[in-house]
Length: 147
Image 1 (cartoon, rainbow, N blue to C red):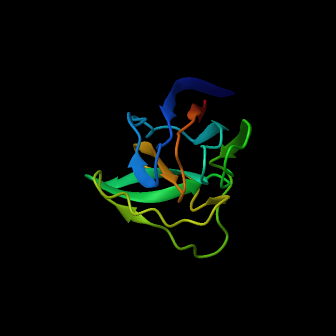
Image 2 (image 1 turned 90 degrees about the horizontal axis):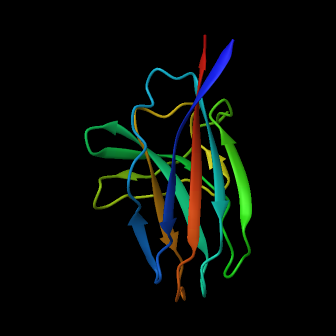
């Protein structure tokens, strides 16, 4: 039997100027689950591209890229993406990493670095040059467990 627990969602407004911002809160208590499904409902910012990453905490306050949604074009209308942690990278992949203050994202767009994140995930939004207004973003997370 497979069961899922609706964990939560992350809602945030992307940066209103060129910058990389760690979004809060994190999604915690992911250990003990067999896989995750993340649905991203993403909208383009005004004036520049937008990149939305998911990072996992690999040690206390040490974060590494887990996934990078497709890059969102300037002013793009709402797009929906699904990421299932059962999808995994089949080759060695360059990832970014950092701390709460300096996220250090580097994972290529439309990429999942490895199957299952650690105990926590967070979103990082990177607004490109020319961005003059942010846009509403939403990430939904479902945790799955085999029983």
